[in-house]
Image (cartoon, rainbow, N blue to C red; front, side):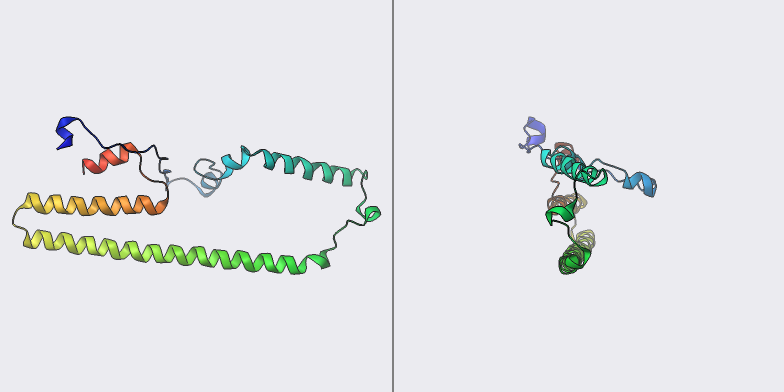
Length: 167
């Protein structure tokens, strides 16, 4: 329909999905900055302000310009056990929650893949027209890809949208 008329639906500008190279080593993968939060942190003024404050306080302590005992602002390790335990609990709780969400999404997409396979098998077995079976399977696969893009939070680029159209 619109492929012959030249009209294409308006797609919002979305971020490109980061590419994953399975041949990259562990160090190269760990040092990659693109598609991480690191560039956003480096652009943040507060990060640099707190880093400078921390370095300044540390330098003043090392050079003995500032002694926390004189101002009664030192923090002994015995006073940090409660907050350290709470922080550990919250991190473990959050990681458990994130992993359970990952497991749930994995199970859902695994079921969805099974349904697509079943649907495709039924189309091959029961639909007389191969063109109709192929088109129905293409639509099913396209809907699965779109839902995966949506769950990933990255959305689709125009190039990916056009690839789905040509599927």
